[in-house]
Image 1 (cartoon, rainbow, N blue to C red):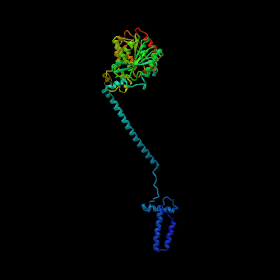
Image 2: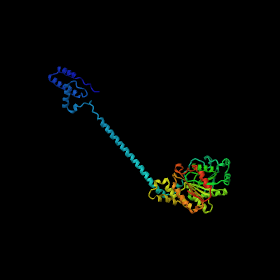
Image 3: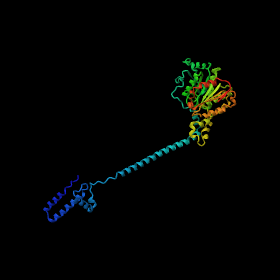
Image 4: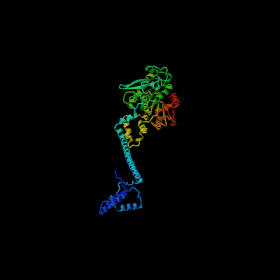
Length: 435
């Protein structure tokens, strides 16, 4: 603890008392020492206000003449820096911190962009080196939607007048088939076995063989809804999953898909008697349908009519027009990287060539707002088929659906005009071309 500074008057009293008992010289020395102590104390009192003008003058005098180490007072406090300086320093540090964060964020963003760019450039070379990838993207047979449904139980999808079959086109291939009878018979169909359904094909009702597109299964939502519409119009509907789709066994290929369709068609004809059999293909299924009908016409057993929903001209043009190809459409060597591997994999689905060899009525249905198969490809296919010599004795009809209807790629079944269109087209037999 610091000793309390005694008042100046006490010091003088001590000096006077000591002076009375000592000699004159000693008294003078002691008096000088006491005066020095008093002056030092006065110089050290920095925080107290002077009691008088004489005290203040003495402090100023001592402050000028005393050495630096003697005039320093430990009790004095240094002035704090101006608040503005601290604020400026804080702003400067915050700015540096923000700059560092921005640089770090830009570095990460640049790293991500470089990775994306590298991936973007690598994909064309990967597709070129592995053509099987392109085939997978065309078939999409590994995409099974809706999930968690039992294809053996079509009644779970609201088809309580449908029977599930399994046919074997080849020794190592098994395909799952659904047969939906006309809805007017749904009560009679309850609890019936496969034999009853097969015999029903010989009844006085036309049959539609439906060939679905890529991805999904025969239990797809929009497909099931179409079966219901066609069944309500009095048609038998037979559909199946190609080898490699759904619960069908085998490896997908264009040749295999066509052969599966041919096998089911022959199976139907062996049981349908003289009832008309129509073939309906949708999207990629239009490629299977034209392959099938061309082969049937070449062997002189054509179907009674061919219906193509959302068709394309050929798989190369469809792949180039598909929305997935937008990011690579203008990539240098697009045909060489992406389209040539499709051809080298044996995938053509050449509808534009097949229609030149088809001799049966042809109906084309296409929505103007189709985002998957552009409308102009369906129109182009019609323009190729209509003047073809193979159709000179048969009608060719193209039915567009306005974009305002919102039918897009797979909802034409919603059209209230569809029953009338089918009735008028399939109910006439005279040669006719309509547009």
